Length: 487
Image (cartoon, rainbow, N blue to C red; front, side, top):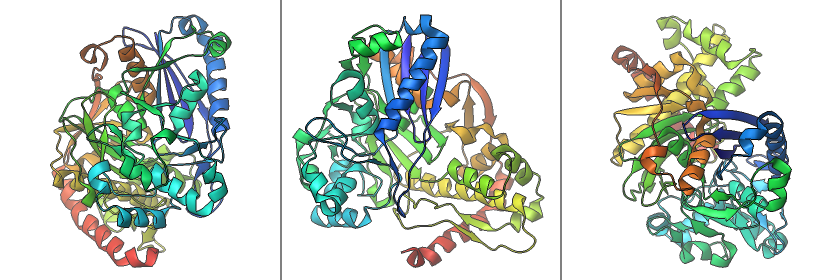
């Protein structure tokens, strides 16, 4: 039995996996994001720990016998967040999250000071990454910055509480902008840009390696065995890939979560920073991956559902699906940049826009515009990946948005690629974390990292793609026309 812990942005999830690949139990505890100023996005790490403790208490009460059989623990989590600690491992300020946009000026300064930074880290400096957040602290909170002794990523802060050890792994560390991604080690040059050195960083392991052991007191509290290994784990997308069996070149997935991600596995470090494509280490040794990332995907659908007073996202999708061809062609265009954008624009100031609204448009048309606009954003990212040599015959479809067969058909048509829904795919990062725990306890990649059974396939519709092409061109022109206004 293996325990996966996935620290998401909106929920902390726990999953128990047995050695026959059966998911024995899952549970989740909701989290909230604080936005004290425009562009800011923060969470209090104490809330993460409270959620973990509550989730473990529930698992113990409902599945105590299974917990007692757990052989290892794996961690997955939201990437890029900055948890700044003092010399006594006390949290200095709320964690600055992946979708925080305050550090745009610091990104520009870092790129100017070190033009070779993308060649080292595989990525442009973007406000979402961890390093610019510390550069922002250095400038705007100098007294706090002077007390920084360690910087941890969100899941690695949980590891510190679980084990007492400061450790990270390659896939999550690759999203800090401090890692030499090709060499899989901290980069002194990148660290120096933010006034830090390797002493401020956690020790690095591979995601499938043991990193530390579980504290005795927590084992007693939660009904686990003391000292069981905690795997290195993975950033949320790399862990989701392990959970889907996406571990070999040519495999990939599309994630419709809070953000929208297209993930492609690579056998070598393959950066393409000019198109704002991310090149990261995978959670397995000697493996890398590329990603296109848009910051608002299913979260844009959730936003418009609440804005329109619809009971849930599924209801709004059904209304959009019921529109005629003519009504879809006449729907407004939606730019889905509610939290800025990464691939391919790298523009923290980009904003959401409904364009072309009339008295004739109601909830169905606005809902359709959002679903289509997210698809257009994903298409822009897919084209950026293809420009850098990325390819796949099919992509697994994961995340909350993957539940809609209608949206899946729209996306498959836009991307011109088959989208596969896997049985149990909604487990995502928590399943990948449990699998990484299994690997850390001696499992092999071929045995552990299986692809799921296919539950549903969305095939590309060439007629629908042709119908959407003029609207995508208009979508791109609209962003170009408004780009200077966003700033």
